[in-house]
Image (cartoon, rainbow, N blue to C red):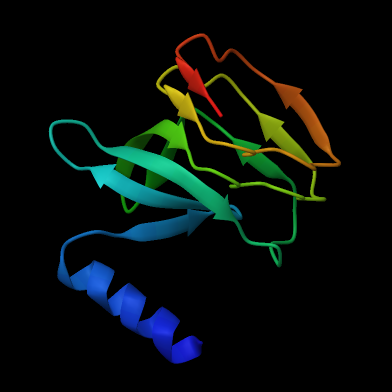
Length: 116
């Protein structure tokens, strides 16, 4: 399984796609021109701290707009999750927050046109 994961990561890197983690939340880069945009793909269960999802995330001196939350991103997460205003997020995937036992607050999602 580790070999398969390594090969997948290697393949993504070779075709210009990338993923990163900031404060326990994992992101997948969607675009880098003209805007920097990402999709939330999950969380790190080993991260020590609360998860806070904002409308933008900074990584490698770049500011990325969060435009999507993938299917099952936080499913069954027991960590405290705060979802702040997401002014660029147009889509929240199927069961993205299902089974979350500590989803504490959800901000403005008025830009979201697709849920589940």
